[in-house]
Length: 159
Length: 159
Image (cartoon, each protein chain N blue to C red):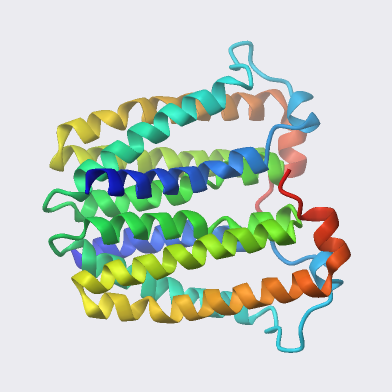
């Protein structure tokens, strides 16, 4: 049963992650001013693949345990938010709205980590690299916003 | 506890549904040939709001029950796929890939309905309108594909 659950949670991660392949960095992103520590493009899919394996493992472990309601609800929320950033940032080119999505994602990942931890410490630990990576992504999005005030102003208004 | 879980699952639905507001039907969609039974634009957000309330209720009910692992895993998968269609169809204007997304969504909703039903029949029933609506959306996407062969050919190749 663990592997069935692992497969379903991994499919959910890949559905969210597919937006990364569909809305990939184009000329617009390459021409933005980026901080010196911006990772090269190939790092992102490599990191996400690792994170998805950790997330699916954590989900499957906790799905088998009692009193998992809160952890399962937060797991769903974070995966729904996970697929949003790339269409907003690379698709719509909205830097400020991307920052809002990443902030919501960060909060949902932190909440999932905490809720998983209550049920199974290993599952909680498996979400730590994810929270670290979303923090880095948030810092990168914030830097891009700061370094491209005109782009952020033109494309990032919510209304 | 039910209402906390309901709120988290509803937030997940709204995260997925936000793509409907971000990638809304534009001139491209209006100029496509559509079947005579195509619902007017305002029907879609009204139906989805109702469905999201049903989905969140079903999720919260089953999250509180034992042996919910499979249902929770499938609930996550369907919400991850739910947010994909609008960016693919309205954002990328890829009619055939939209059909693939809707097919995957339909399968995941049917699987979630079945898995919810094993734990709580009411939760399963709450997913019936969702499956009906995704069937209608699939028929609409298929009709748009058939009625716009050139658009589908130009925009729908996966590679």
